Amino acid sequence: MDLNSQVRHQATLAEEAALAISYNGISQAVMMVTPNDLEDFVLGFSLSNRLIARPEELYDIEFGGQGEARQAELTIANRAFAELKQQRRQLAGTSGCGVCGVAALEQALPAMPSLSPAPLPPARLFARLRQRLAEHQQLAQPSGALHAAAYLDNQGEILFCREDIGRHNALDKLIGALYHAAISPRDGVVVMTSRCSLELIQKAVSTGIGTLATLSAPTALTVQWARRHQLNLIHVPHHSEPRLYSPVPVRGSVSVGQTVE
Image (tube, rainbow, N blue to C red):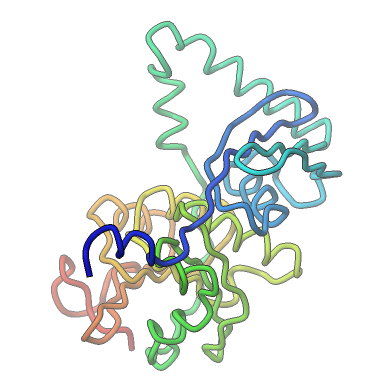
């Protein structure tokens, strides 16, 4: 088969759209997203970025646009809106050479309260995890180009799976789905199919996730942040047992981690 024939018969491509998000009429961000589960996304985005403190502060959502250009108009509580405007004023003072300076560093590496330690899940919850996740990734099956965030209950059942071109977007969608369903993110395990980046740690801590498991190994910085904020952090390799990186393993090399007991 020649290249032209391969292109004509390629798999379905993942969708991508620009979503402009505004709060009480003020534009906040434009995110490139997979345009599904958008109501979950905007709630999770608002919570994980600390734009609202709890779901009740999001009063209304209106979606507009279509195709590659979408809009989400959010109405939030006055308290949350006042804090949002204050954050914008702090960033405006450092914008002469782009978003830089102390305020921007505080945005990238924010001070966050530590979590109350959650119980460690048993290793059996991760049995055949990759295969089970693949079965729940409905959008990724035809395209192969999407990250997934899933929620396992304390029996290891996958209750929710959300997908997106961006790993942070997938996590925001999952966070929104959990809060819409009135399920505490602390009670189960959140699993990411992607690399464990610092932003995932920050979103997990901000929204009260107790245990984060990823299919790719964490970096030293993400492990530091997970331990500092008492987030359980687990890596599920391809061909070996799950490895615990946070809290500090009781035995074995800290740099390597240990099997979850």
